[in-house]
Image 1 (cartoon, helix red, strand yellow):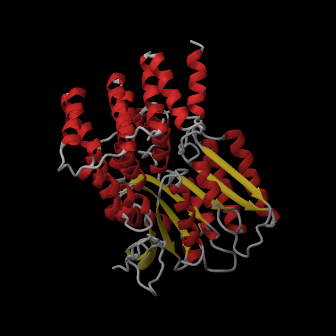
Image 2 (cartoon, rainbow, N blue to C red):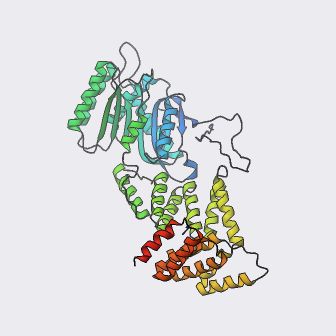
Image 3 (cartoon, rainbow, N blue to C red):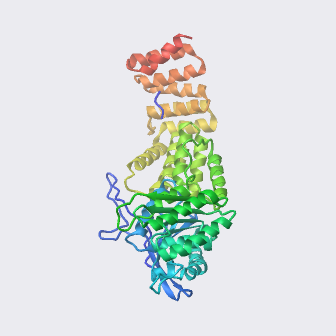
Length: 508
């Protein structure tokens, strides 16, 4: 019945793990900084200056050979937007809601010069947006593509004056950024008057546009600012280019002096279908691969199946008894994410339950080379498997059955039992699990023989009779099924399974 130069500061916030009986070993030392990225400096000939960049790589960047979409973040410094962006993208990327992204934060030097396409009245500032666009197109983007594994999919996030630049970039160089997420781009009177008619003309004359635009406005902004945003929203509702996705949201004031920019909302909308639907039905890994191949066509870049989703779908297959398909899916997960602890653990568990102990041991060992703290279960599983491989009688007998058949396995058993020097141990649960593996493989007669051995070994165990009875019932031998269920019930009057099975058998 029982079955068995950069100052390299790669993002990684370390969590303290403890493993019972073991002293924790940490790469971090007391007083080390917690960091969320690295600084880099690029010299711009176009701007005739050095530009400071803030770079965040996805958590698993060093552990895979995958490439990633790039999110370019304007108006950045470490204490506001950059930190928000890293936290949000790591959370959403970790659960599969969006793809993991590389974040490139571009620090200001002269923000109004670079970010505003028109000069501000009474001040000699603004009007340098075209030059700044050249910097992106000719210097920054090629630089990032050269030194990092990037996909041909770029997002531009524009807070404050960066919002003006982000919309200007979209209508001036739509091929440069696939998606724009911004605050209200009409927050400066001169630039709003400059920008709106150009945006209106652009969208009215554009028949198709495979881009995405998300704008967030707070309702305490100047009425004229909101009026421009509302006009743009109505225009795009009626004259939206084919393939263009747009959303403007008008929200109540957040209460912050510097409002948070819409990372989460905009990214969820942009990648609305990245996460597998809840009703998605997986029969094999091919179904998941097909879904993300279709999504790649829609998003116009190669979308990798999220590790989180692969774990969920593999678990579903395991729960449905589709062991072969679950193994294939978890192995596919490891091909994308070689250090996936979820996949390694599950493959170890599957192979252990299958009696494939050498394979299980290898997956457990690989898991522990990656992480060796707060993993008592994996240590225990590995110790169990090592013990079975070296000393289990049931393991030896099962190996013999697989090679030479049930009769050879029974002879192996007799030799062990009659050998006074035998040091192999006999374990009820291991023989029971072997019997169920045989029965699950359609070898019911062989399972009966193993369950009978278990009865001889442990005649006072109610469970061994229950298992033998189940095997007889599956073979069609009702008489022996009843006999053994009765014996199990005699030894354990609380065996409700035996009671229910006897009722069913007596009705036949």
